[in-house]
Image: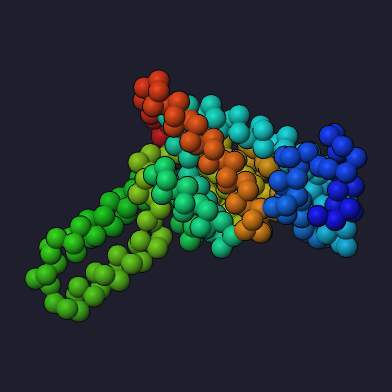
Amino acid sequence: MTEETKSLYPQPNSATELDAATREMVEAGVFYGRKKSKTHPRMKAWVLANRGGIEIINLAKTAEELSRAVDFLKEKAKTGGLFLFIGTQPAAQDAILAIAAAFKLPYVVNRWVGGTLTNFKIIAQRVEYMKRIRTGLATGVFDKYTKKERLGIERELARLSELMAGLEELPRLPDALIVIDPVMHETAIREARQLKIPVVAFADTDANPESTTCTVPGNAKARKSVEWFLGKIQGVVAEGRSAVQSTGVQEVPSPAAQ
């Protein structure tokens, strides 16, 4: 960590050390934004400075928006809220898959299928079809088919799995989307807004913060930075699940699904 980096942020504890939360963000590279020419005008208020043509994100704003996002998701999680994680870039895929596996949550890490939310009934039918093919192959239902026919079925399963495997834990419309880089996932956000589903996003300086419900500004292009953000969200999910288990709260249907 350079002295120049330290000098950009408030130092409440001493003249030489950053506070623990800010240090964690600095070490994860959360403060790196995009080039000034790519920064969205509405994100300017969250930019602290420009260094070498790169916007430096105000981490005080990041901490403030993260706190707001955490509080919002925590309330959802305590009532059995269902979160859909979206991050198709390599920097986000592994961390999202880890959270999804740990808590059996739905996710999209390959490609967003248009209509996943707005045409949910049809998508759900395709997911069930994928499950039936998988079960059929595992139980020998297709053994009577020719080798060529089975190969076609296996290819169809591979295609569907790539697109929809992460939606198997999505029995209804989600209570919130958690999106890494909203610029990359405009279609998903547009569908969510149409259905009034809240969106919490980890967004770089090229994003419009008004396009989502909660926008946490940060470096959405780097793996370490994305993992920092998702680590905070994972903690919220874990806490919410514990609250649900201890109180016996039943998962409630999403208003958007009714």
